[in-house]
Image 1 (cartoon, rainbow, N blue to C red):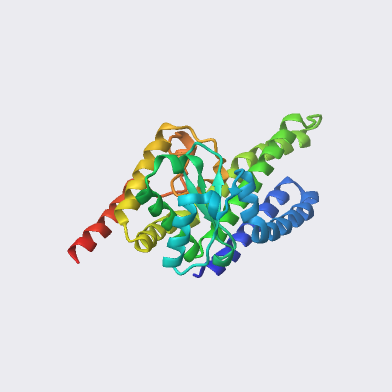
Image 2: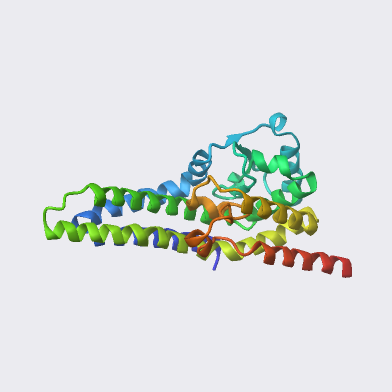
Length: 285
């Protein structure tokens, strides 16, 4: 199935989920939730990259401001035969990176200040190549839409929680509605997470392989993954769970409980093993 078809399937699934939530709340909610689903789909398709970048406070940098980061992106995008993406820096001490945009012509590579501090140039090249691979594979739209959809559903669940806690309980029907809302508070974020999981795991393996080919250095990317994974295990993430699937490594690796069980990424150890296998293949050749 092509990524374009997957994108439409995802938009349809998110719409169906939102309309179903409205239906569970009552007949009067179906039309408002349908309108919300349509508006969310249009916004997610055309403005998802801008929304995600604003959510993280990312700032676009010029060639002079970007320094070695901009130069690496420029060089590797040429090697990957991609249009030069816009380059953003996220003001965060956490070490991570992601790509976004509607298509390669509107591609964006965003990295945190933390990743620029801890990675050497060889490792940074591996990370940038991985993100460019997502752009070349056209993963960026579907991943960003999933993140925006998950954020919207999580926000909706929080609104339902507020309504359930502070709504009137003067009748049995109202009590039943509160119980129904509490059930949705649990089910809606779970459904959003499952949607993200369905599109994330295999894409990371593919981006690792293509990224290693783009930079010509599987070991550099493997070293970067190991360093980033170690750091996330030691630091509690300040990012939003809804956008976790966008990042090169899961920012909630240190989390236990439900966040660990529903990880949006395959195990880093397995990703490193596959990159090491590429290295052995290159040596054998």
